[in-house]
Image (cartoon, rainbow, N blue to C red):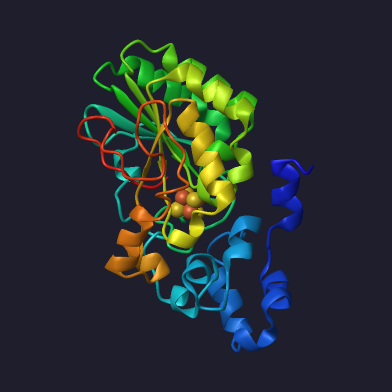
Length: 289
Ligand code: SF4
């Protein structure tokens, strides 16, 4: 069986040419301008998302396929959430007193065209892995911080060893009560949710995963299985969503929360892993990576 790394490497669509070859040139009438639009952000569509595209322009396509509108879009290219203005050291954003955002990975399994951090994501020089030490020191020195949100890029695309090193280091900081991981891996690459990974994560409770499922179709059997493994490790998954990204209606959104009523995994804590659980840290918002 292919490992998740092989699956991602061999079966993803990682270039516009591969995308055109897969779906047909007739769907890309202005390819030269589209290449220009795609240039300002990474491109990759993970195998699970490729398999979910039923037809060009559908809600899954809209999330990952470059669009000519990107020639005019500035959101994500500029720091619209003022994260950099609140960054005291590389990889840390400290906007609210009791919580901090910690960027630990520059890469994602699929690159969402709506990403609000596209000015950095996909570029290791802008989310430097070599500068995590100053971030750890900052978190150690600021005892008012009790909640750390690991993000990137996608933290769960790191190796098991790297994830464990980061969690272990954070759990050694006494004032950090809650750890959260922002990740689209349960949706994009559910094969990455292995028993080994869950065995690591469950050692660092309280630990929450903020997922980001945007459409009912994304709750594939593989995704539900991955969420079940997380739930069985006692990890609560909360999901934010982007209606605009996939062009969904409010009723589609409602269906999403009801979708896995017969097949959703059971959590030992009694919450359904793929629903908004309401069990996140007090004052927290479910949001994406
Ligand atoms: S997975 Fe998250 S960080 Fe990565 S491209 Fe999508 S929205 Fe951005």
